[in-house]
Image (cartoon, rainbow, N blue to C red; front, side):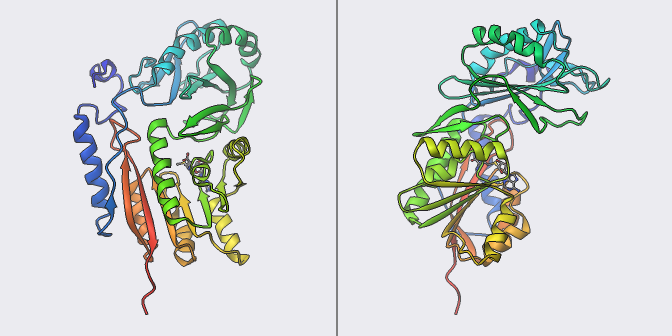
Length: 381
Ligand SMILES: C[S@@+](CC[C@H](N)C(=O)[O-])C[C@H]1O[C@@H](n2cnc3c(N)ncnc32)[C@H](O)[C@@H]1O
């Protein structure tokens, strides 16, 4: 894929861009299988392709420049804005939304945050697109200084960008390089974006995690639902459940499904989606490890099948040991970091990976999603 920002050396986020896409896929498969080589006999499904361009459903745009001429993209090493609003990875509808958003910044006279001088207000614009074109737009601000002006110009923005279903402000007062802060002010009547994934509408409230490639996420949920339905467990826990993608896909009559997720916004999203679809999925806001440890301590049976989909750091030694010692017959581990996946597998020797799939969630980078089905080995006599 040609990218003029890469060619000019302005952005090198896509570290694998010069590599042919077929080579990227085979290298990711090779790397994943090499990390999981200590567990021979995994039946691998074919890799899921992520697409050459236009696959990202979320634009994380750092705002630089001036109130009259803002840049939307990244900052260079000196802290100056580099405009990447036409990034080829972004869904074209995100690209189309960038100009009206930049115009809003000018109209509302919002000063881009200057990281060097620690002055200004607007740090990031975070925009998510649903498959039907609906948009969730978030202004990450240092303070509330510009909120009244954004509200004043909101009718103009909604006129220019009628696809914007949810518009919000996130307050991130710290001068740290953190994407967003804890407080969110929703400016529209609608508070969540509905994202169609397979045959489900997933609510997405601001501040909830969602996989960045909707088509690959749909393939991931279908794959896991297929494995789970084959096993037909009576109970499933979906740990690190986010907005409920796995939990809702594996819900079935007579099956007890519990989703556990630390973010309040994501749990609220999952609850709304479950209610809309009439699915009996229980959603708990908690730290996954603490919740499992408390359940075990209270003598509650661990689910027949446990899905885990942690951040890059993995599930860690404590949760791995709880699962190892539990009665769960199967675990599905979906990971965006096969290094921590392999480390966690080592800590669960009774749970053996039997099936696996690599999904190219992040084309043009070394990153990928790997999902494995673990089966409890029969106890040796
Ligand atoms: C990789 S995302 C997966 C989300 C979801 N399974 C999906 O398919 O979109 C990891 C999720 O774990 C959540 N999380 C992070 N730390 C957690 C913890 N200690 N306990 C529970 N959830 C956690 C994050 O908020 C995020 O939603």
